[in-house]
Length: 76
Ligand SMILES: [Zn+2]
Image 1 (cartoon, rainbow, N blue to C red):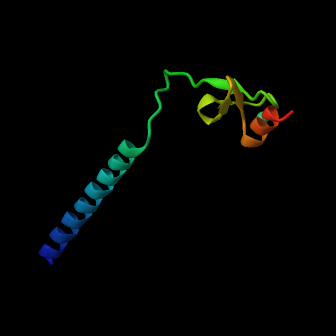
Image 2: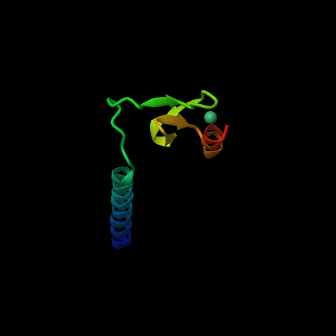
């Protein structure tokens, strides 16, 4: 009976260690953005919606929120 108790304690300890390790790996794989670096926002040249520059579509120095607005800007 004593050995079963020891086995259970070892198993629980191993499970806790494994969970902590998995959580640590997930935190390292998550892309981190430096909060000190502000996100550059741009306005869509068609509708004026503000969006992050990384999500915007650029054409001739103008930014657009989606391909439809970009295409409408090209074809008047
Ligand atoms: Zn737009």
